[in-house]
Length: 576
Image (cartoon, rainbow, N blue to C red):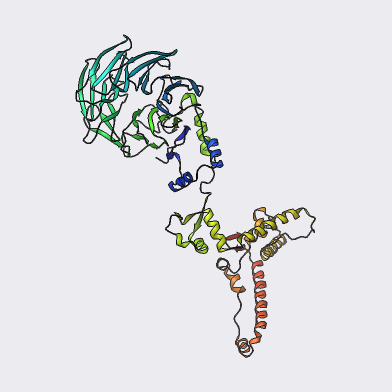
């Protein structure tokens, strides 16, 4: 999926493709199960756009009315029909049937008239008052279509005939007979521009075109070699483009004036394509000519001019039974094998529907919402730290996950290794915490006026005081570093203590380091050392006095600087 295209789950379980976590972290969390924290975050972070958007076991089909105010879905078990009032974001009613639904069509602009193809070879007509009429067809049906100019309901299934039920006359008309060798018909499409019938044949990879006015076949389109059959058809509103889904998991795009496909898209799973449709009236960002194709595993949105790349890809957690795109919007609705039906909103695909225009604001808030660190159960360590912990032998094993210039290590393993490397680490940490708490409690006590708050880096504090006094004598007043709360930890926290013996300190302060070093011994001192080994104590005192002289010289040199002073301790550098 493109990194710029965001998919929001507004109903049902979130898909695997909407997460940005690494695969190994997702598998680790799935193996651990859901904790109370994860359940709470799931409840807080889940959007249920339409209430009761579910079925007891699974959903079969879902479609919206042409006026855009209602949605109708079928599912099981027990077999039933549910109608949702989208303006109220809730279920309007449910109606049970005697058999499971295979396909249905909404005949009116609203939900009041519909026809349903059931798996017991029956056609049911439903009205606003309820079940209206039932009739039976000779063979099991697979798909359903409706020709509005003639009021003919076309029913195809096993066999080579397409049954025509005229709803105006209330009787069956002469069926459309295809080649007798046809084993079945899986898909029917009626072109919205010129009403051309297209029938997708099972097992032969053929699409037959019929003219409803002549009641005869116009032509036949043979798919490329290797395609086993046609499972889905969709015509574009321009009347010239046709999308064909096959049992091999491929979607072919044809210009009706050519027998060769101008684009081919592979779903990647080898499963039959169940739904295919053209996106019309979307946003300018999505462009023109986007196609949606779906099999049981994945939904892919792609451009007809660049079929090799995906505009977006969605992999739900349950198998897909049917896909419906709300025309002119960025909303997708899926019927699946799970209890909850799923809805996705893609802002780059189109705007939110009118009945949920607030969704744009919600998605913006979701983008700004800060989420917890997904790596909180892991510790990032560098190779040098691995050496100190004695874990270098784990490099190359699944225990260490390479990342940038280091590795991700389980936090439990890191704590155990650190405890082994330094058994007193916990005691030292506990002692430091207790000492800090006692110091905070003693802050309210009455102290002497001239009390010194400097606990560490006293030499650094003395230098700062001397520089400050010199500036005051020169008439240059400024904020003191000692009174700056941003640097309070420097003189209170032992972790910020200057290590004058460190290599970094020597590189940043070469003059101080050279003067602080012990001066070389003279020839007389060497002779005395050879003659009397016990004079080492005296030399030590001399060296200490020398170091003190060096510090005094260093102080004088620091106080005589005109430009500024650079102070370094460990990795912290303060420039005054």
